[in-house]
Structure formats: structure tokens, C-alpha cells
Amino acid sequence: MSMQWLDACGTALAIRSGDLSAVEVVAASLRSAATVGASLNCYTATFEEAALSQAQRVDTARKAGTPLGPLAGVPVAVKNLFDVAGLVTLAGSAINRENPAATEDATALRRLREAGAVLTGALGMDEYAYGFTSENTHYGPVRNPHDPSRTAGGSSGGSGAAVAGGCVPLALGTDTNGSVRVPASLCGLFGLKPTYGRVSRGGTAPFVPSLDHVGWLTRSVRDAALAFDLMHGHDPRDPVCSRRALEKTQALLEDGIGDLRIGTAVDYFQAEATPAALDATQEVALALGASSEQIVVDAAQARQAAMIVSAVEGSAMHFDNLRKRPADFDPMTRDRFLAGALVPAEIYVRAQMFRLAFREALQRVFSHVDVLIAPATPMVAPRIGQEIIEIGAKTYPSRAHLGRFTQPISFVGLPVMVVPMRTAGGLPIGVQLIGAPFGEAALLRAARLLEAQQVVEVIRPKG
Amino acid sequence: MSSSDEQLAEFVRATAAVRGLSIDESWTPAVAQYLKRLLDAAQFLETGSLKSEDLAPRFEP
Image (cartoon, rainbow over all chains, first blue to last red; front, side, top):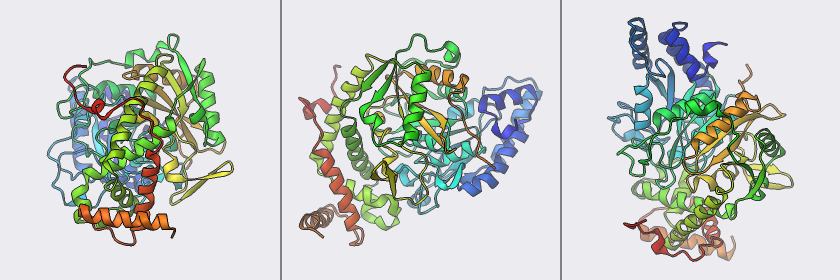
């Protein structure tokens, strides 16, 4: 296999063993960014000089026998809402171009760099992360490597396209309502969104502070586990970051699922979805031996409440600019931000109270199961600009409908691993493995079993 | 435009003015439409016996 399609662990191993040099790996990643990445419009910045210089240091250290970090020489990229020292953090906006450059890396990026990862670029997204398709009026839409006429998903669409397009094996994103899980599903990748507060958001541009999570997209389960092991843990830069003890997952990946109770989410999670999404979910449930069906009561209301919280908190983050310069917002997000600024306070309070009740209801579900299976998106990637999706005899707004199955889950901060499947039509679609709070290890073990049995697979784009 | 749509558009204009937001007239229908979606959504949020003090930070768990 060419180095372009190795996973991060495989790339690191090849560099440690001397089969590949870090310089040639990083140079190849930068070439892909300039060619594939440009055609997919997934990068907003690349760091040629700094990346090659760091790669050279890795090669020098290896030749000198200096111990290397677990990601030494591995190219990575980040959604452009992560602070990168020396770079303006755009967060998909035009307004942020006027900001000074960040002086310090985001904590999650710093932890990857401490493990030897080489940052090659920053990636495109919806403005201020408010969307599921990475259609951005300022910077153009991010395209799906499997079909460039289709969206890569959002808001971490650049992260999905860069990994699925073969530019980097690992990219950081963030997930507020599904923004890691939707691109993972539409681009055919593994996507991990840990428990709320498990991974620091220090040095990231917030969208909805009470819902924002850091997550990542990878080509293998072992990469998702390694990234988790490297990045989770307390950080004073993020006030909600958990003080819970570190829990390493890599050594647990081959433990199987014998002790795990696995269920399938039914009712809401089987409705308003295409057969492709339901078939993929059923296949995963069969492979994992799901032994119960669970109804998540009030999931539809949870999605609605998540929309309210997102609009209100999101608009609060940008209220000054909404007042002073609304015309500078992307028309794709502006209407929703403005609407959020007009919501009566009673409605926001009710949505937050509902959130407490819903969290208790979901905790009851997780007294019966350790892993809950549900579709990630109701359908494969829609076309860029597509307004309506028809499912059965009904039509839905295609952009918003992408979040149907992800929003209720992130609303209460549960960890989720998305695993990729191939549909009969050839396009990918993802399935969510949802865990109890801090249950990332169980999700990674289940995902690894599916990967080993080749039930799930990362599909390389044609051509 | 129905009378309820017009009422909502008027609410958008009036509330925006009070809040110091200048919403272009061409944006108003879309803002009003999304606001209506949020307002409608809130009607179905059952909060049981929870009260707003349940949202308060407390020193004991």
C-alpha cells in the first residue's frame, strides 16, 4: 500500500523502522494537500516550511537513536478553529481574518505535537461551525472525495475530506451537534467524539460552549484509540475539562466484547432514514450480537432543544458582531444566529431544563446497555447546494436532516464512535456506537471487533 | 404573507430594534422562519418536575 493510505500508526511504525523517512512522508502529505486537497477545497492553510523542518528533525533524531514519540513524523491537520501558534484562527469566518494570529497552540494540537505529529495544514468548515455540510460562502464548499459534487459533511468537513482524500491519516475536528460524526459518515471514516469534557477545548474557537466537544477522524480504530490516549486528560485552559483519571485504551482494543451489553436504538432512530442507513445499522447490530432494543424517550424533543441551545448560545458568542456588522456573516449562518439572538429567555431555560431530564432518561438506558447502536446520518452525502432530500414519501431539508441522529446524543455529552460502511450505491455511510459517560474504551473495543471482522471498512475514493 | 407570518416579522423587527440589531428587510423572512421553528419546538419540551433552580450551580452534589 502506498504511504498515502497508511494509517497514523502504520506511518509512525514505518518511520521508526527506517522504511520511510519523515521528510518523504510529510512531503507527500503536502503534495496531496496541494493537489487533492486543492481540488476538494479542504485546506485553508498549509505549513510547508515548518512541517518539513520538523520532519527533518524527526529523521535526524531517529538516526541518532533518540527515542521517538508514538506519532513521530506523522502528518496531521486541524479544523481551522483550533489555535495554531502564528496563524489567525478563522473558524470559517471572514470576520476573524482581522484577528491577531494565535500565540499558542490549542491544547489538543499541542498534545499531538508532543507525541511527534507534524502539523501540515488547517482545514475548512462551516462558518463558526454552524452547519452540517461545510458549504461556506466565504471560502467555497468542501467537496467529498467520493464524489466531488457532494458535500463532505460538516462542520468538520475539511477534516473528513483531508483524511478520506489521502492527505493526512488523522485530522482534528469539533462536534457540537454532530460535526465530527456527520463528516465521518459521509466521507467513510472512523470518527470519535469522546464524552463532553474528556478532551480539552482549550485554544479552540467556541460555537456552543455547553455542547462543544473535540473529536477526530481516522482511517483505523487503532489511530482513534491512540489519539484518545494522547489527548484526553485535565487541562486548566478548559473549565469543563474532566479531572477523571487517565484511561489508556490501546491495550484494550483486542479484548473483544464478551462482557459488553449491546443494544440497538429503535423507534426514533429507525424513522425518517433511508434503507441504506437502516441496513448499515442492522448489519452492525448483527455483527455485535445486539441483544436488546432500546427506546430513547423524547429523542425528537432533544433534537429540538439542542437547536434552541445552539442558536441562543451561538448567537451570544457573536452578539457584538451581529450588532455591528451582520452583513459580514455568511448568509448560510446569519439567519440562524440572528434568530437565536431573538429567542425569549424562557425558551432557553426550558430547553436547558429539558436537557437535565433527558440526561436522566439516557442514563437509565445505559443501566441496561454499554453500547447503543444507531445510524449516524439518515442518508449518504447530499449534493452541494441540495436543499431537499426525499425519503420515502416525505421530503426534508437536507442540511438540517443530516443531524437527526447525532443531535440528541451530543446534547447530553455521551461518547460516540462512528464506524464506516459501504452502501450498495458505493457511497459510504456511518453507524454510531454510543457509550455511557466515559465509556470510550467500550466503543473502541466494539469498533475494533467490527474492523477486524471487516464488517466496517474505510473506503478509498475511486480515481 | 399570512397574518401570523406578518406578526412574527413584526416581532423580529421590533425585538431586533430593542436589542440594537439591524436586520436587513431581505433577511427578515428567513430569520422569522427560523425563529418560528425554535418557538414551535419549545412547546413540546416536557420538563417534568424540574425547576429553574435545578440549573443553579451548587456546592454539594
